[in-house]
Every structure is written in structure tokens, then in C-alpha cells.
Length: 138
Image (tube, rainbow, N blue to C red):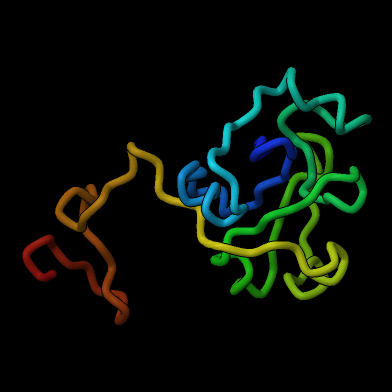
């Protein structure tokens, strides 16, 4: 995600299953507010990239990076390589070194449409032993 926090444009990196919580991200960045940018506002910063497929390589594009702490705990991360057909998989530690220890904090949250509790989760769930369970088992 490309965001504007204060007077600075940032690349905010978080799991694909989450969305940016703007209040949390503002706290992480130490600014009063954060706003998600529209593609028209940031595509000029990513020459040669397809809109919506910008890789989170702040060092390459001259933009600071902020990473959600859940990714900092991951062994490997995968992200678009500037196109919608190609991706890069890299060890998180290598990515962190490449980006020169970017700012890290918690700012992702599940989208509003995601189930919040087990009772909302559709269908049966699989136990660790591989057997199926119904909702009453939890």
C-alpha cells in the first residue's frame, strides 16, 4: 500500500490478507494522520511497474518503507515484481537488510468482511489431528 503520512509518502507492507488500519499506522509513523493514496497519485514513483503491482522496494524507488510486524516474524515473504504476472520470494532477513532495517510496527487488521469469531466461520474446521469438527467443539 502506498500512503501519505504527514508530508511523506511511504510504502506500507503488510500481509495480503490484511488492510491498513490508518490510526495504528499514524501512531507507528509518529504523524497525526495517514491517508491511502490512489494509483493516480503514486504511479509516477514506480516507473516501469504496472499499476497495482508495485514491489515494496523503497530503496529502489527512493521511498521510506514501513513493515507490519507480522511480516517481520515471517521466514519468507512474497510480493509482486512490478507486474501482475511475476512475483519475488525472498527470506525476510535478506529483505530487511536490502531495505536497511525499515521501520516496523503493528498496523494491519483483517478487512471488515472477514469473520471475527469462530462462530462466523463457514463450514467445518479441521483439527490438528486431521479430523473434522463442528462449531460446538470450540
